[in-house]
Length: 402
Figure 1 (tube, rainbow, N blue to C red):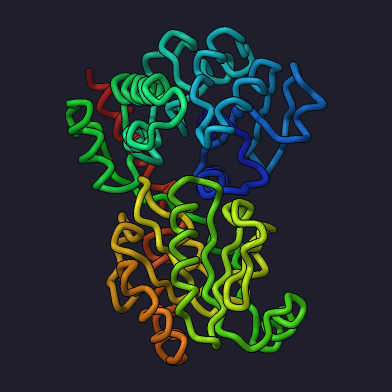
Figure 2 (spheres, rainbow, N blue to C red):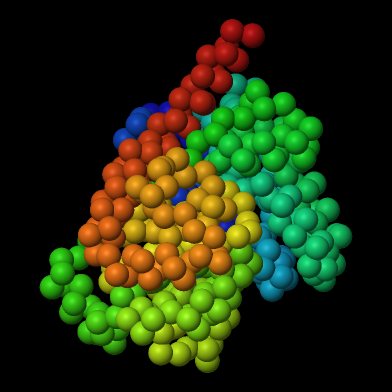
């Protein structure tokens, strides 16, 4: 088998957030396509704290291994950045200082290296054979968060924003292949850093659709009873504690003041932790794992108006045949048909869209079925993995001719 190395600034198994979900899903597809995948993660999970300074090996599937290493300095740095709701911005610098020989050995024996984040890349930290392409999987146009950080006058805004932009520029400059999730991100990155789009190839990230179990009506009723939901129409928003998700949740608080009694809006995931004590009859904040609420939901919501990349939550909604109401911004990168595969509604019309779907079971079922078919066609992890490998093999053929 050919060998592929993936580098991330965080552990991805078990996947808990959108980025981790798509990374793990794609990695699981590579072996079936003839590629062994070794992922190297600068892991920060509670279980990793007991093995600081040692490399942990996780055999996640045949020919899919995660190697995880945590250092004291890693924990300290991550703790600082996480309090600011930021990623592990200086992972690359730490990697340069704390040589990870196992990683270097795997890179030397690989046919390609994937960087799943700009944070873990630092020029000169690792040596790459000339025949090994560096592929940057651009989940976002990160500089847009830097600009938002400046606008909001966050602590150390200019220093943090400069670090974000520096890291992003370096990986864009040095990568042989850049894979943005959306055409909007490709355009934004090219314009911001004055880079040619010749090495940019837009590939939407996919998910493992097989992991979604759709309950029968009887099973759904039983689960609703256990969760105490009752007979209300459940309109669900799932989000991490990411800034754009918190803003979206705040918009749902305002909408809930006017929603009819037959509708229950539920916010689930880590975003809900920021709204403790604000539950009311038609609005629940449930910070626990969202899976049970996804299985009993009638309508999916995506009221985001800021951020970057593609909303992975949309794909999860599609996988469960949930009819989704989304803002135009929230649907960025989704190559579907509004009105057929999902509904587009801006925030000032969100209430009307929720009530309309709540009162039309036939339309909910129609849009939900269409959404699932769209996901199967364009947003499966297998499709993503195939397209990424095609880019790698195209680069290798072109490089061999030089």
